Length: 99
Image 1 (cartoon, rainbow, N blue to C red):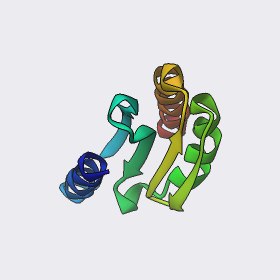
Image 2 (tube, rainbow, N blue to C red):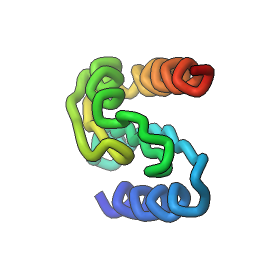
Image 3 (cartoon, rainbow, N blue to C red):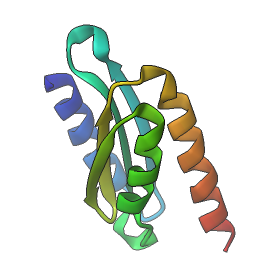
């Protein structure tokens, strides 16, 4: 859990660096007893619903999650789904940016 908390802290610092930052992260700590986690965050200025996005992407890791509009996380048990969850989120965010 400590490693994930460190990642969360780092992501928080990164999204505060600029008004146009997006972070999509997947963490597989299953071998360390922590499980699988995904974390999506963006600068507040972007006004994207990361909470809604994480709820949908969590299905790929057989997990659930939530959070704030600009910072959300999910935990699950299917490590093989991390890449699909990240690709799903990336596709949705790319469509948002095109608008």
